[in-house]
Length: 321
Image (cartoon, rainbow, N blue to C red):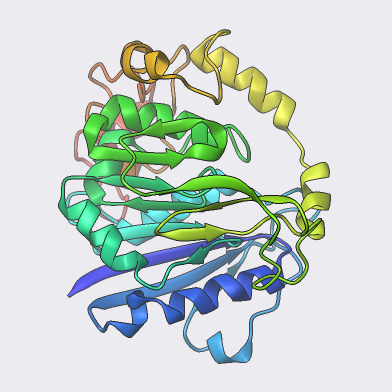
């Protein structure tokens, strides 16, 4: 039986969150009986409410040590936490697949069957919806790409990860971010369009429901932002710093979005990171391939302990043998 770990990341969107969780339990992930599943919610210290019928079915982690006034929280750290705990060991993964969802995603009833079919066809990493609304990973994807760069805590992180995914996996990744003009080896029928139905049939608090943008694929439905979400976007911190980091890492003229065919096919394969990354989770990242030996995207400058992790001197609990 296929073992699937799902992490839903949320910030200050309780009514939206419950719609997402309900869609998971209505989907073939649960109803087909084909999967051994685990669902967790990572709540970034915010207004939170989970319907009682879900309380015994999901695990909730409250990030209460972080400030509760920032937009979203520390998204890349949440993603890395999901990948590290979901796979635990990239050479001996405890789950077959890790899926990371944002809280404003409704999964389609047969999304798991379609994901499994695409992974079985040779795709190790799948991104669908607006930006990284849904990310699905096999262990080999993380072995090749690595973890998220936590210096991009919220914003620009998905562009950074897409560049590294295409560079590291080539045709073994599928990117369907039509909303931001980032499409590579697309395997879904995603679309991004204006609709007179703003999704208020699912989320009654949609902002400007008469003329709103939304995204949909055969895997997920991403309704328009609620007014509360719009307010949160207005409070986003750190975007200017992330833009500076993007230019520092990938170059002054490397665009963050709207990538044309020439950029995707000819420029990305030649890109090199201008600044090193640093191993943060040595007990896990020691199995990322070519970390120290010429990986131009995920190159790492490390000290004795981190090199020990690369050379296998750390056991599976991250302790020096």
